[in-house]
Amino acid sequence: MSDWRPTATIENLQKRAELLAYIRQFFLQKGVMEVDTPVMSHCAVSDPFIDSIEVSYHPAVGLDSSTLYLQTSPEYAMKRILAAGSGAIYQMSKVFRNGESGSRHNPEFTMLEWYQPGYDDQDLMSEVEVLVGTVLGLGEIERITYSDLFQRYLGFRPEEVSARDLKSEALKHIDINLDDDNPDTWLNLLISNVIEPQLKSVPAIFVTEYPESQAALAKVKGGSAGIKVAARFELFIKGIELANGYHELTDFREQDRRLTADQLQRAELGLPQRPLDKRLVDALESGMPDCAGVALGVDRLLMLLLDSTTISEVIPFDHARA
Image (cartoon, rainbow, N blue to C red):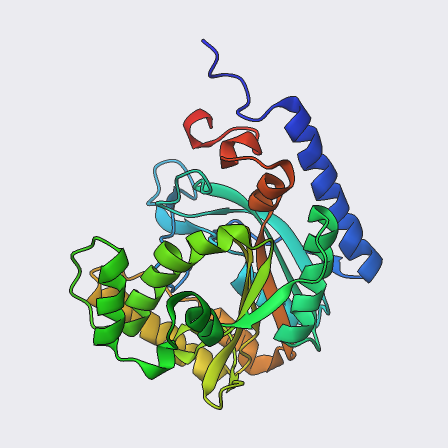
């Protein structure tokens, strides 16, 4: 029997330790405070496309249990700390997601998340570029808008075509039987199945100005094409999505509206109705500073550094051996 052994080699685990140490030194030199938020929460993420893992908590033997949720991201808790006046903060922590399994996915993985008051999405991209570029030996990273990305790789701009046209285009490339009138469904399928594979030949690229409908927790702004877009970016390295960042939403009313909209969408999709974190709304109402934040997959960064093909090569034990 050899399944007691780590899935990563000791040499890779040493590289992992060096990477974690470098990241902490990077933020120490910038005066960014490390924080440590709870792994379990009474509330769950609202995003319909992220599935929280539930755990059962018993206050004492024989007493009724309550359901808690393992964090899918430390974002909500970190924003509550920001609203309390922390200044710039970062966290490297384990996060947990149901259904995350594959060569680049594990249900438990390490996320680096940080927030810089006074930054917008452009400022934060520059900081991500320094961190990632130093680790991977990259130069200046290209920036391209979401609209220009589609124009480059598919020959059209998403804002200029209908949902029916998007579906028709997707079905040229993807064998799928899906009845959905939401343009974002087809845009996401085109990104993941058609564009991302073509990005494998691109060393690194920031995709910016996502559609307003894909703002998630980002502010909405006027884009370069004169239409409203999300102040959001994603970083792709050799076709691998590595980081997702926002000029953060600080309007508590809009935040409340988006949480409610997510819950309605979950109901329409037949997904569980889980408690929404209204403490986040309260934190924003108290006055969270204008800031930008980003989440970065540490395991994927190490995969890219070591040219690994599976996440199991860069973590001590994957899900099967946990």
